[in-house]
Length: 235
Image (cartoon, rainbow, N blue to C red):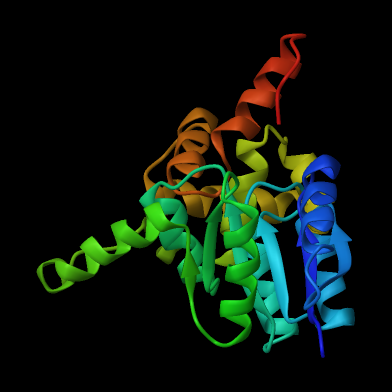
């Protein structure tokens, strides 16, 4: 029997270890790689061409949404399931817009995680039950929403979303430029475009935007804030 190959992408080692041990109990599932950030997930997917990637949203270097887009570009047959502790509509919508075919809450049972992997590998979609019920209700009123603009993320380029993430994570322009491999002037240019597109003129506003639109999770910013004040942040 051919196993379904899986890459685990999460910046917390303990989370990856938990998923690995869980999947190793299944005869038809095989973990072929573990990534601790979005960029590493993209590189692994390009090299290993897994059937499925379990992708956390809030990761350093490249968040799960941008990483999903790049994974699907590099390995079109790979299916991505987003993992998150949050089920806000913006998170689910942005995951879907990025090409993910599944969305699981991190408290999802082991049985459902394995089921999700099998379902998306078959070409189906899979969502945690609470999210699936909400999506079903939204489908029932979809005709009433025709013509209403969706998340403002749709107007942003992938590069601009990456800049928003780094700003929200507390990176200065110079640090953001170094991580993205571009010049400081280019980062400044992207920030200027974001100011015009979003009508947001300060870092706090961009951080709130990043959280409300699922670009980063609230815990990421909380951890940064705690570390900056000498407190211990939780993942």
